[in-house]
Image (cartoon, rainbow, N blue to C red; front, side, top):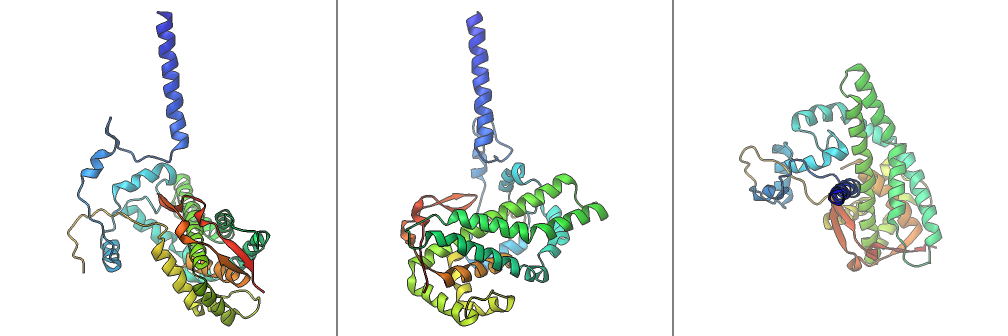
Length: 313
């Protein structure tokens, strides 16, 4: 009898350990799982996949309510702009939008330039030394830019609205900050990673980008806000990269009625970073060796995204 009880206790302890380990090792799961079958019933709903850009714009502007699939992120990101219902999202977006105005974004150019120069300096130790993983540097660079730019005005507005209007409690403030850091820390570095790999795979395109940068910027001066509008070919390259390797390849909307079918901060940051990097280095890569995985967003799944760089003379 004692042996049976001891065995039951051991099994229960092992089950608890496995459950705790699963919670820490895996990303948050969507609530509402059924016993045994989990979330399988979700796959029996009617759905429609839209790929045409105009149709996507129609859906995005007329069907505001998010699909229940976004519930999976709430344990991680809370009731933020990414996960909240339309009624909550509409009010929060209106309150927080001033933190992302063009006037404020223009004040970030000094930070974009200084952090881009720092990235160029960090790349220097890998010049003429074969392929290396530039993704780590891009993620650190993006986080530094966010913390030096968007973080302060964003948090200032959150705290001001919390104190003066009672718009946000501590939990809501944390959710919005988590979303900003998580989104900026993942999306821009991934987009830059794919763009650099594509530039390294297409040397003719890269040299055209370099020629435009030299024509617009000349020597070694910083990029200013007026230069960004003149770097048209570079912007076209970035947009084509985003088309080929869309960092967040899909969004989901809940249709509540029949519908008839017929990004600024990131672009400023990416163009400034690429201008400094391409001006300093010639990139080599092979995008055909890259393997991808989709975990909330598109990411590399092997070392095929590595690049080699050479100093320009």
